[in-house]
Length: 143
Image 1: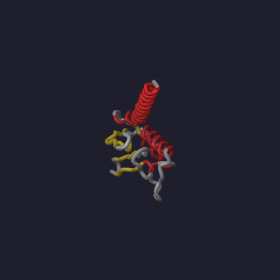
Image 2 (image 1 turned 180 degrees about the horizontal axis):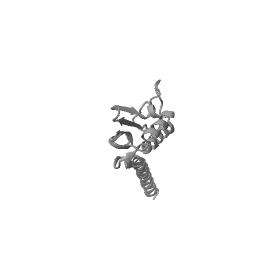
Image 3 (image 1 turned 90 degrees about the vertical axis):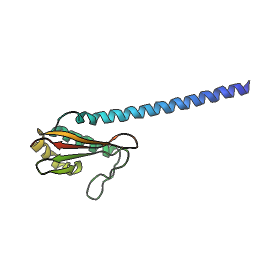
């Protein structure tokens, strides 16, 4: 009888552990899906310079939340899990700028000059480790 009870308890513990792990994976997948949707929305639409400003601020907040370090030039050192970077390609000078180059006072000037300009997302990359967005590239469609 004791052996039977031990086996039942053991089976119940295994079922609990498996259920917990499944729920944890589902929760993580839902978090990644929600995170990605906040950014992927801008992949399907023409986006204004004001939206780009918001995305840059959101990406910087994300990187700060996860303590993504910066190099000596102030650029985030991208990791393989939580970092995100926004690239902005301008057609007036055919240069691509990383978001850090547009932050602070420069971001205010960017918004002032290009807030009403349309941009199109030309590329999204994802972290292989967890499927979160790693980078997005936006290109101006007008000047």
